[in-house]
Length: 149
Length: 149
DNA sequence: TCCTTTTACGGCGTTCGTAAACATA
DNA sequence: TATGTTTACGAACGCCGTAAAAGGA
Image (cartoon, rainbow over all chains, first blue to last red; front, side, top):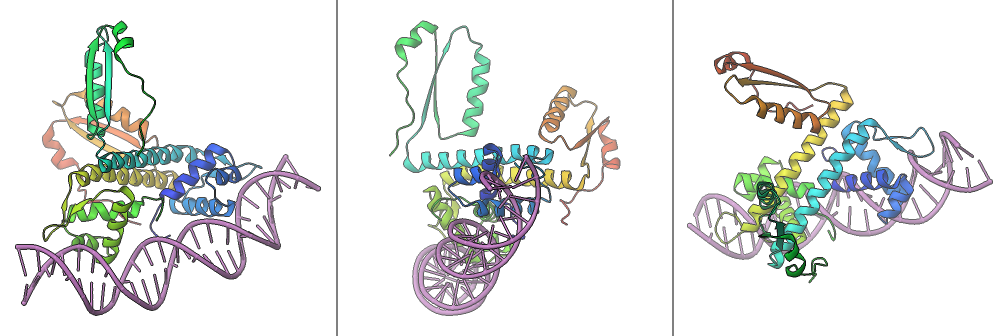
């Protein structure tokens, strides 16, 4: 409690912000309201900022809260991405991203995008095909999400 | 311990990776070696990946460890940035970033970078000076890390 | 009066530290 | 043998949940 913003605190924070109240935020995380209340209070103490305005019946984000909410969301997103990459590496299952672009689409944009993907997710194997758009409908296979286990 | 990667674990992880050993990593964080050992073991269990290869006398990063280390560093960086922004907002103290670039450096790049900074950190006041590089050495002040407290 | 948040208190889990056992060059 | 990591065990700290109190509409 002396040095430490926590990922759990951020999860509580985003849940409350999205749900609109401590109660529903707590319900979303299957936690008691008191736990959420404590966590948010601690987070506010850590940051030295009031995240919510408790003036009214429902808590409403302060300007600081709005700004910091973006940070929290971005951080949680990155954590999920890290876990996802770890799962991929752990299972040895090389995720594959197959992309088919029309011959008319500006290739440099695709190249730049793929480079970003490669930098962010080195474990993902990329495959690029440039074809007239009609053939896409015949050649691409159906994709319904990653298989588990 | 069933669901939760922790920021503390990531701090331990990066400290060990940078220091080159559990012992020196622990020393850097003012913690006992056992604490670091436990934390890293838990992190590995959470991610389902071996982060270090304990074959030799010194632990060495596995390929997965190298990849995930980048994620951890990026996350910790974002957390620090969030805390910094919170401090700025809390104290009302407008942080100021003074940048001096050589006259030969392509200005559009600087402009783009400053725009990004402005988008990410609206509370930071930016100041840009374009000067011949020699004057930098006289005008910039010494920087030896963030002050604490 | 109803709904929501905060506070009090007790239990539980996790983490940390000291110290001994183990492995490697 | 010396350096460094893991394991064992005891203690402390923090978090969560139940329940009662306080604040708005």
